[in-house]
Amino acid sequence: MTKIVECVPNYSISDNKEGLDKILAPFKNTKGVNLVNVEPDKSYNRTVVTVIGEPEAVKNAMVESCKQAVEVIDMNVHKGEHKRMGAIDVIPFIPVSGMSIEETIELSERCAQER
Image 1 (tube, rainbow, N blue to C red):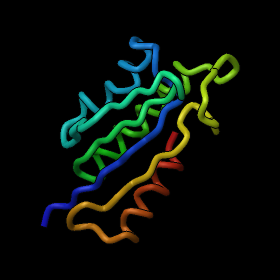
Image 2 (image 1 turned 90 degrees about the horizontal axis):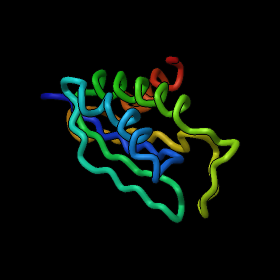
Image 3 (image 1 turned 90 degrees about the vertical axis):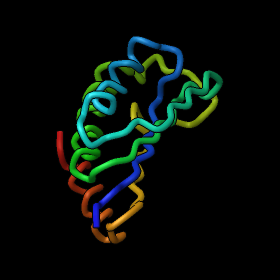
């Protein structure tokens, strides 16, 4: 059975199209990853992204996207209604098919450890 994972990162950005394009590029350009949805919210100054695909491909694209986000998003000048923890607030991984929750947790931990 093919393993499929979903990832729903939340970025502290909404109105910077060029910056958002850089953040989304790894999801668009990585084989085995499908960018499903992008929801920017200007009042929160936050964008919720949904991607789905092969676990390693999704993890690798997520790591690259995070690298772009920390370069593009300046939290010193960030404004918005939603409380923020950083350039990337959360990165939940959700098992969709062929993966246990334990495998998904391990994938998320490996993602967190990469730079």
